[in-house]
Length: 212
Ligand SMILES: O=C(O)C(=O)C[C@H](O)[C@H](O)COP(=O)(O)O
Image (cartoon, rainbow, N blue to C red):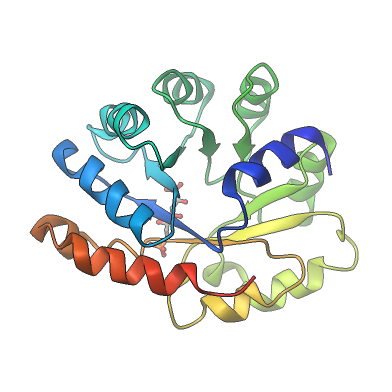
């Protein structure tokens, strides 16, 4: 374990599921983060896939004390810096580039980059990272691939994301090299749009009970 990995793991604090959020309307950010937090999912990933994402991160960081807000879909160093400046406690990327690794090296905010191949995992390892996102998980061999990594790349742990749902999350979490999973199923677009925060809270509560 390197110190950066330890810092990231301590932020996630054993949470089995990281909600991956797409916030179309910035007014939804705070009530959504509160609902997830009430349901036991304090660490959340707000993806930079909408125009309001950075403002959503700012608001959650400022207004939702219980939340540990991270930024997702970070593709380059500029976005890394903007997301960190907005108050992100951690940064998630679908992949890994040397520019991103450089940005993370110069920042106290830990990076969870995506990796799929042994070469990508080894590049992240060389940069001192021992905890990676495995994305897109289901489309990239899923559980079978993660099992195959366990022996040759045994000191690296994963947060599989992409295609994970309430149906298969427990199977991923049962793997020794999986620490948590990421997914959007706990905060579906239709519930956010309708402001059904109690239903989001119920989905979060169910997810937070999954054993790791
Ligand atoms: O934007 C990113 O950085 C991503 O990582 C993509 C998300 O992880 C997936 O969109 C979540 O996948 P689903 O749970 O299958 O919806």
